[in-house]
Image 1 (cartoon, rainbow, N blue to C red):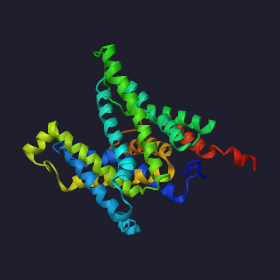
Image 2 (image 1 turned 90 degrees about the horizontal axis):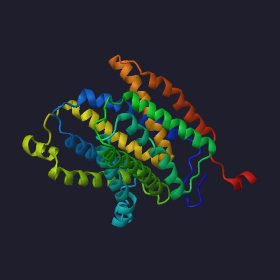
Image 3 (image 1 turned 45 degrees about the horizontal axis):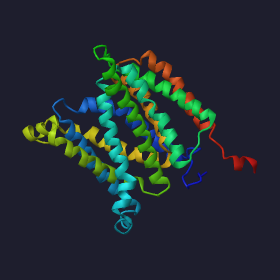
Length: 325
């Protein structure tokens, strides 16, 4: 089924989309444990992020060469098309991440978690505005259940941070407003990526390459006046690295490619379901490998996630014209 502007309306998940979603759920869920075990404390964060982006570009180019799309790239690619499809979402995501960092320092974990999960609603909102993809009443209810589950999981794994020393104005302007703006930007960027891949037929692999390059350039500019930039100058780019450091870097890069595939084939809203489901995978892996039992929050969230996925899949928004036929 397609919407009026030509975008695909993913009312059901095919085998390929389901496969990508399961892989992304497992990767996203396992990433925190892999990073914790393989990345040393001395590793400079910027070096691992930049290396991840380079690996992501290399993997995407290999996949493009394999499916034959790399050959005609020189004839089809334009700078304006690239900036519209990938440059704008990449810049939005960079701004969103900065706002989240500011907000997290000025809010307690509960308030931050609740407000941060509103990005799922904003994704659905911008998907409707940009792609004209509607949600049924049941799907809206499923989104509510998903947000409740996400909040429970985030609070269960959150820090015991206390913001009692922060005054009300600082909490509002440096905490609440930034996280709400970040949620709006997250929904907008996700919908723009979906629009580029489904309407403009921009390859998800090409978008991965372009967004990685733009994101890397933004990160390089930020190192000019950041502590990480000074650390790289003093100790070297690969300070603290071992052979094991490459494992989470490669895993994260492959996860980035999977995010593009899931967004392209299933949409930004379903990507939200995948990410929340991955939080459950993290909790289960922590129990299996670290002996840390799932919290009561996790046990309550599990049926909520399962119910929300089932509802969202079972009751898609049907085209009224098709109903009458």
